[in-house]
Length: 374
Image (cartoon, rainbow, N blue to C red; front, side, top):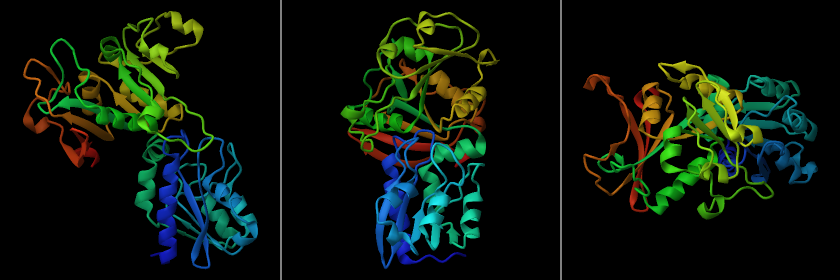
């Protein structure tokens, strides 16, 4: 069992905290924080801000006098990289500045690293220990870990309903069931994801933008990092995508996934990209969709859709994390229900584990996972 000093524990907690500075901006890359310690203090720190930007260790090295780094300990939330990507290997930089010890929270699940960084540091005579706050480090990057180990993104499913489980009136009216605080909270969910998935029925009925409103939601990005919008993914088996609407008025890329080839005016302008997916039971195969999103280097996906698509995600056990906002309203039996699932008997009903319940303004937020994934 590895032994860690109190200062190393403090430094790792700090590294985990500052890594959250990249929560909304690291995109395809993991969120990573790093601290350097010696003589009883944390004297430098850094975090990864965005793709193409310095990694956490490099940023922390650049924030201090390199003479002070010689003989110090680097505390980092993810194994230092050992390969050339958009930036150089962090292992080489740590060896060059002369650190004597590296404390790592978790091994990098990326097959390009996966222990190679640790091995290179050890071969250079550096003491390396792994496992300090490993669980917390993994929770920092659920999407990156999922994409590297399961070849699929981490999938969030967001829903909003009245306390009697209704999402809209019988005529489809649904804006707004929840209050402004809950809708603001959803912006933070969108901002951490690189893709938002919905169905064509939601597009036709609600005319959504499906973008992140950073300024109004108080979402702060690291300094000098430009705002980018998530990929908006529209599942549309029969090619019913309209030619106008809020979806196209907002900035950001749009991926139109259909069951066969359809023409659309916005395809020729490049505003929309079409991708034809195979069908399963006359519907777009979601398993293939999530694989495609992983191939596009998307770590986290937010499904914001109607009861049919959300129900399909539940039935196919694709939900990694559910978020349900419950409004203090009663819409009655004629209103539209929350999830379109049809278990044959009670024993077949999907079970969930409620991880957290908290107030968001006048509404409640329930975070849940499927029992099969708890």
